[in-house]
Amino acid sequence: MRVLVIGSGGREHALLDALSRDDSVTELHAAPGNPGTAAIATNHAVDQASGDAVADLAEELGVDLVVIGPEVPLVLGVADVVRARGIAVFGPSAAAARIEGSKAFAKDVMATAGVRTAHSEIVDSPAQIDAALDRFGPTWVIKDDGLAAGKGVVVTADRAEARAHAAELLEIGRPALFESFLDGPEVSLFCLVDGTTVVPLLPAQDHKRVGDGDTGPNTGGMGAYAPLPWLAPGAVDEIVDTVVGPVAEELARRGAPFNGLLYAGLAMGADGPAVVEFNCRFGDPETQAVLGLLDSPLGEALLATAIGRLADLPALRWRDGAAITVVLAAENYPGTPRKGDPITGADEPGVFHAGTAIDDRGRLVSAGGRVLNVVGVGGDLAAARADAYAKLGRIKLPGSHFRTDIGHQAL
Ligand code: GLY
Image (cartoon, rainbow, N blue to C red; front, side):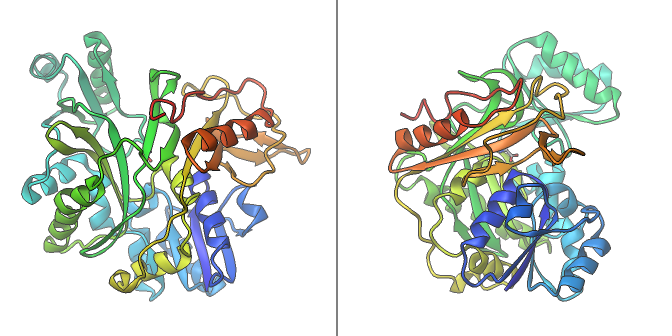
């Protein structure tokens, strides 16, 4: 099978890496890809936001499956255009991708499906901010009601900071979504979904703050680990039965069946799981860790989902042990990152490119905030951590930083 993966981040590099281990995958293409994906796939320039451009490329390459990694093309309806050309595509329609693209839509779906989530209100005028701050908090959760790649979220006990974030969103013309704070450890559960068949992957946990000990501002994610040794047995089934299944059914009932990867971000509170957010695609950087433990052929699983045959897929097999992803970030990230610094030591299995480029001297250089995703795998979490941090020790990037405590609390 020939597969085309759309996207250019560490998640897409890890997807391609897992696909390259599937014997049924004979040809791998990435668009646009990155310097890391070029080593295992053929990279092609494409406008990821254009359904016609992606479908034209897929036809030209004669691929059997298109896998769309990021949320932006999904929300824009790229999967719809590819599907309409008769090409199998892993990724939801624009209508179903609204589960991520509009937080207000997601709340409505969850309310109808009876799924527990935070209480929320949309604030769309500066005059409403103070009253909303009184009704929520003292831990305030304020989100951009749209796609913000994790960075539009501020969680803070500081009223002034909360106020400033809401005001900033309104100033740039974006409604601010106020949410009640959900207590409990967070879980990211990724599920393959084709309509109403739901197959969960291993549960993972993301580390969103930039600094050790969960300090500093939120980022797109600084690391992750899987599985979660502290998660109660039966919790994954409970999440599928009470959260993901009912949401998939409600989307289908609304005429927007979900096909692809439905990502439930949950807080595991004393009363059971409650939804923090849904995403319409693989999470980043959890995917890199989760796929490090997948023993089943990934291409077969994605194709079965794409063509609506998930119910026939053999049960997924997972390696014993644990995996962690550590993000190597550029100087000043999550502020404006410094770019163009040379990178050495990155040429190792389990090192995925997220923000890299080749400069005019042919050197591998940094080109984004989160530069590399380093995945360690081992018999247990301690061994996985040792593997990842040993690899990081061999990588050199001036000014870079990473968290040293990914997965540490779970130990
Ligand atoms: N891990 C957070 C995200 O993918 O949005």
